Length: 354
Picture 1 (cartoon, rainbow, N blue to C red):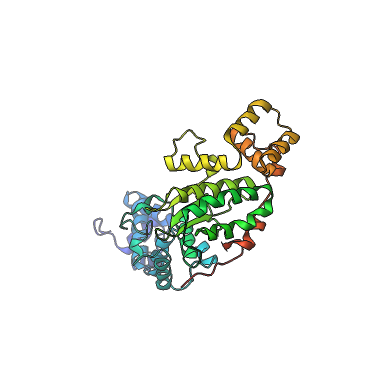
Picture 2 (cartoon, rainbow, N blue to C red; picture 1 turned 90 degrees about the vertical axis):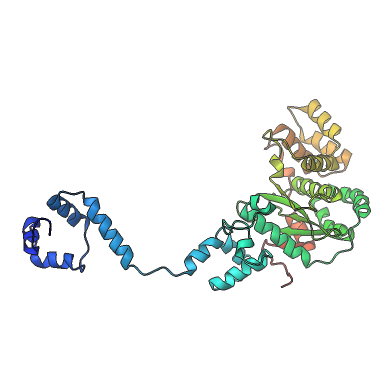
């Protein structure tokens, strides 16, 4: 207006508006609407975005600053915080209290020592572990610390394998597993998985004499339970997980995409598969019967090797990828195991030391 020597009444005339309306606009009592931005653009021969950007800048300058806790709570959302609160892993409260709860849960001095919380966090082997998996792992550790078992004996664990093997004929046999492992010095912890974690199990050590096996029971099937359990037992027997925890994700599909497995995982897979059925027996059965697998033949093979038919069906599924074959034999075991085990999740909150 000054460049053109215009007064308010001149601009009002050009815009076909009233002097009162122009006064409200120039005094900041009325904002620049999209329609007004286009009108001013036509009057001054500039882009309408020029006036809209000035209005946005003015609005932002006038707006109140956000509550500081918003940014702090947003940092915590690297983890499934609301689910952790719902599961009573954390106590909800003001942001100061919640940050303290997170540091306590992850055994950290402050938030910057928790992987995934801040980009400036100190790098550890946890940095490559997805946040939901890491939260699950720390809950397993937390629960395990509150358990009391005998001192670990590798010999006792090896000697217990034949007894564990006898439990594979019936789903109810899983009830005895926690006590057998505890007698060998192994803490078995069942922690329900977090959304999108896809964890089957884990092997970790509280110290050199205190191994822990964590299971999620993500797949409630008799074949998967025994495979994952024996897989983790092999990790314990081999001393795997002492330097840093081993998290086993999606064991049903491990190696199926052609990726090479680490040696420790390959050995654990081989031990788990051989525990239920001798590799030669299942390979010969498939070679002889494929592509037609009768229920009678499967029941006969299961009886011959003294395992539940679901164990045989599970191995056939993995080797042939015929996932719908006789699925009725893949019976559930969760309801048999949970009453006898140390559990967190599935409607139960484990008691842990503060």
